[in-house]
Image (cartoon, rainbow over all chains, first blue to last red; front, side, top):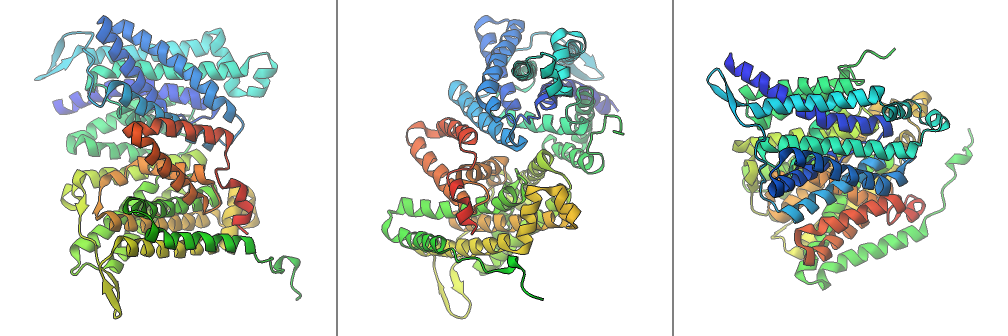
Length: 286
Length: 324
């Protein structure tokens, strides 16, 4: 019984971090039809930048902000140099291009920071006792913070002037252009925002398991899964799907090893694509 | 009935066959003149090229990008390993058979699910399936050897009832060359057959192909199966060359490299993937001399630049002639 409660907590916390990763991915997909293969690697790079800032200043919150800003600028640069020339081509070419970007980023991180695991110390100290297990407050704080950031993004998209620009471009880019919205600029900005979200979630995730240069692929894959399960380009759906998939994985890891628990989410993905390809958590399209 | 104009015999592609003969002759002579390192390198290019060509059936001819070819390749390796470790005395042909059956079986399984999806969704689902195989192979230590993989000794080259001898690097190169040539000619024939034409029409316009009355899903399933079989074949060859099967080759990185070979060499040409593999491996060889494992940084940049400025790949300009 307490096993189940602990795993539920675990699943919720992991789900919130994953939701943050996925919301960046789904935003980019929803607006530009780009499947960003390098998303997990931007996350990894953000985590490394965060770890370096923590190493120099010792301030975790500063690291969070700096990593987000640095990676947002990198994202904007990437969008301008590699993705902008591909607008109008087969969407599959963008997968290939971002795959290339992912290779470069990964090896750059290896070159810059080496193969060893970097630790980010926990910014919120203390633990609370849940049955006989110590559960760190930090993880709970992370989940709450991730929820706040996602909520902030949602509010921005819903009410902010530029958020409305972004949603208008998602719905109809030609019309948006005709109304005077600078669509290319919106594209770049959205890619930057998505990258910043990835970087911030990287810094948030850092204290959980440390930062390595190979962590990106795992996140890319998991973010893909929840984005598809939740309905591509649908923010709310991705968030629900992240929590759903993470919970399932947590429960599965009671029975089998965590390495094998991943298969559960793969199965959920395949089932979703077969029986409800529009996504589990979206209303049935008419 | 009189013959329709479409049945008119096509002019023989003399230029193509001359080029083909020259390249084959060069490949036959290569192991005799090259130093041992480059000899092995040439064999490896052929094997990776075969893998990339198998993927070209999907990418270039059917318009589906597979990010899961490492699964078929790796299962071909493990299939061969299973035959060579369990059957005494180890037989080359049984290894081939086992590898093809394993990879083909996996391809049927993946094809059944993945072909219902299109575009990006197909790519992601093949990626996910390959990761499922990877996780199974990686964690099922008793059978697959887990992280360490399986090692075995190279079987003898036998032609039953006629001849049996150890492989030397030179005879192994010729053996690989023979397999690759047969596969190439077979796949070329398939892509030019009515079946291949249907695949290409799926690539050009899927709804219209369906409207004409072709059962698109069935064609796609067969295409993925074929592709998986040839990928498995290349896996068997690679296992034979290196005398091991390892989970690293089931990992997604291999699938990514396969796609890179295709894009670099030119999709939809069958020969392009070989050129792409050669180009990639040569670059890697040259760059890793002084960049060690960071060779992927400049290589990745070159890859991105080629996607943007040379989407047809190195041999794309020959596409029409190569399919003649």
